[in-house]
Length: 500
Ligand code: H79
Image: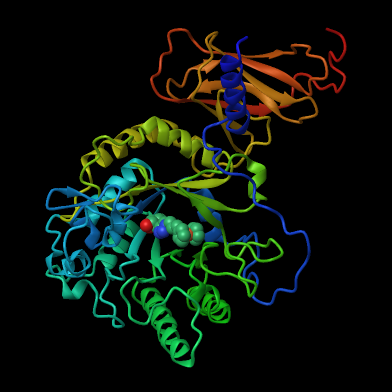
């Protein structure tokens, strides 16, 4: 073998071993090596058992909506694209480099005077989300630019100062709640153009007083949101990584208590606050801060073990890192419905919710690409959603064919990789007390036979259950096998070991 070929094989092997499945872009989080005294640790138990948290665990699929004045430019201005100049479409105010229009920040800060989304129809959004199969939604009440989509008493930079004037948050909360979809409010703490905000920790008395005003303002807005929209189930916080917020751990600890006291059952993710040692998401002893792990933004955990049994959600964009409206999708890889279903099933197979983002335009219309995906996902969910809602991680060796989910004695395998021999092989540990006894395809409702197969591999800890797919069953989408679990046909630790 010549050295170039060998080098490229070695490189390929390194990639294959570090990225053995889609979604492994990161590693398990480091564990604390020593115990520290923590005063500002978790307020709620790591595993809440109340009905609101149970509902969170059962959602499976959610919808995120990013909407604000950034929807007007849609990632471009006067024919010039902000691609490469701004971190994301909702970050367009931070446009820099040589493509930025003259006096851009000033232009952006005056966009609210044109915000008049004549086609906005919260009921139509909610119907679409329902048809897609979303059980909860997260709505941007205020992003990093600070513009509030509700008539807040605590800042003038809000919807009432736009020509539109109507309370958009109320319309969204009411419309989704009426469709039976739980609503969570996205709230960015950091604000780019609030004179009282600062990124660094306040040092002088003057700075402390100034940031103190910002903290009071934040608390007021959050209390106001709970007062105005009591139907909401939780907050999805963002922009909590600056030192100013990190150093305010006494304030944020008390604020979390106040929010929970005001709104029993409220669900808050781990991004809200940190302990007194500056540890975010998890305190210095590794305990989760808040009700679920909220770090899975445009990435998914590579294995169930990384999650330490915590609840979690993953939020995902359709274009690469575009949350707010992006008019131009050309030349970008936009995720397909099969890509998104893969991520959905990967998430629910590991006890997480998958939240797909939509960025409506300045008139309140979804991007046509989003409409298409919502329909495709909805069509798939109508056939297969029982493998998504209310399911839990199945304690089985992972399958190369797809993802397992489980509900009591029902096991689902959502197949993404159909075997060439049409034989679906389920590995069940020899010591398992449950194994598949019958099977059907959700798509056809046709019953399939399950055949126990002990393939007699030396030292193999598993025994196998084979399900033959009908050769006339064709699918261009992932499909779900539903299996009933019962007494295994064989139970022997020693079965076939060393007897090949
Ligand atoms: O609203 C969408 C994005 O606009 C917003 N979150 C999603 C839901 C977002 N804002 N910023 N980011 C995502 C990425 C920010 C990354 C960084 Fe940092 C902030 C890099 C440095 C500061 C956080 C803290 C990540 C690394 C350190």
